[in-house]
Length: 237
Image 1 (tube, helix red, strand yellow):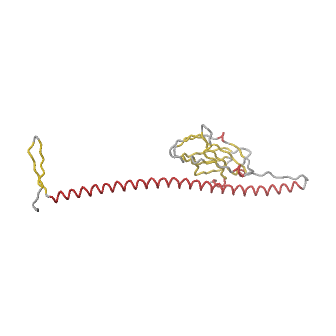
Image 2 (tube, rainbow, N blue to C red):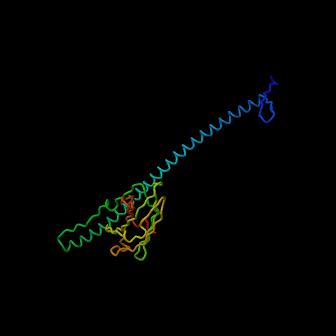
Image 3 (cartoon, helix red, strand yellow):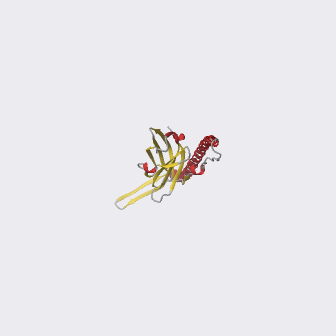
């Protein structure tokens, strides 16, 4: 049995027959090698598919976590803004009370100071399609310099819209200054940096400016993508 050899013949019409003698051990080696090669390849394909599925799952979790984080930060900022307006309103009420007491000494008619509705001042809209980041303002010489980044949170659609801006004074009065904005139209796939330099209206001097109200809406339908009221104190540089 030790002398057993396998003959392998190669025949072609235009050439002589070629014969190769092969030991059975080599055949077993090639067979085992082929089995190992196929097994390794199959294991590699399975591992690649498993890792690809895990990568897709992790990416989906990352997108969801970022969305939840952005929503949490937005809510936190909203609560901070409400705290500021409550503190400001309390101070205004104190001044109004002192003024009312002073007038009561001269008149018997009671005076009730007007009150602000915080829901109107800080009502917020967020469809999850657009977001604001890196908001900064500067007041100088009766002008307001405003810069911010508009982020497209859909990551797939190109969004076309326009920016609207209102100024809110310390008494809660809102003044729309959107008509004075230049380059207020936008068209973004990922993000866009936006800057405005506007002159403050005469009825709102620098010391009376309390907050800005930014609105991002669809250029054609007017649907509001994002709206938020932000105290100037939070973004002043």
